[in-house]
Image 1: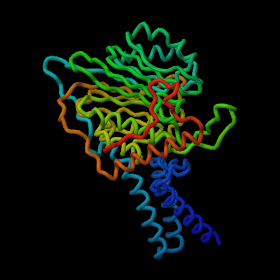
Image 2 (image 1 turned 45 degrees about the vertical axis):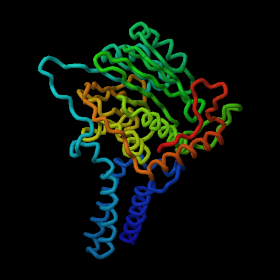
Image 3 (image 1 turned 60 degrees about the vertical axis):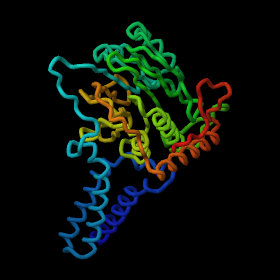
Image 4 (image 1 turned 180 degrees about the vertical axis):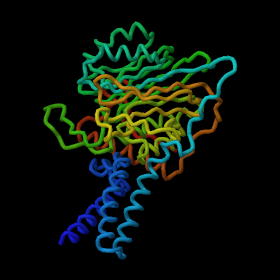
Length: 392
């Protein structure tokens, strides 16, 4: 009896592991589908449980064909999970080359720091100390509300340039820069509640560098209806995906320039959406071939995902990449020190199928935003965009 119960438990657990491993392959924006994109590392480790139980049962009742079948399924699921994770480990080839040492000094470099501070956090002075210690040239802080804006007022004296939008409920975003901002605009790409920062930096020794900071809505968020504050159903991934595709479109439109795109994408580095973003823009992830640098949740070591990102164009090499603890936040910060490099002057050429997929994501995201009454409209919204782009 005990052996039968154990076998049934192994069967059910194995089937569950296989299903959630392949579930994100379904072309759906439903949050309960997209959710399983996140814990691939955790699921890879969890596969050890049915493997051990299967070994125990095979030893107990002697190996037979059914044991081999379940073993193959578990190993296949494990290989599938690892295929997503291994590109972000040292066993893989790097995407952003390491900067070569200069005989006459470090050469032209800039340091970028991105951090989601968590708007319910109030440890302003400690964050100021962190910024002072790291001294980035470019600082993007996410979830900046009026209290955080007041607490970080000393940054306005440390940095000559600032752009952003202060909003409550974790929706604000502000960029501080040591470099002049040649162009600057806060856009609302899909949702009128979520700003993105678009600017061009005048970096000495490099020239113009295009920059975007973004923070799309996370799938699974239990959103509130703005006009009556009633709790709505959990949000799916369509608005997030659409926003990332619109950011990709902006990069495609000006592919000749150097680019830096950072922010809390609310999407893991190995998801189809983030990989499509990289393919469309030809921007590189410095984590590939180096480390996961998982940034959320900072308080739960066994339950972390790489959702805060920094992408750069081929005009940069990497000097240093770090993850930092942000006092009181549920996110880690990412810092990257970049050096100038020669550009290869090739424009990104994504396949027609990928271009069509991106357009579909934008259309679906606009529909979802309209359903939740948070779509971006041109009327009364400076710099907002609501039209679907042509990715060709």
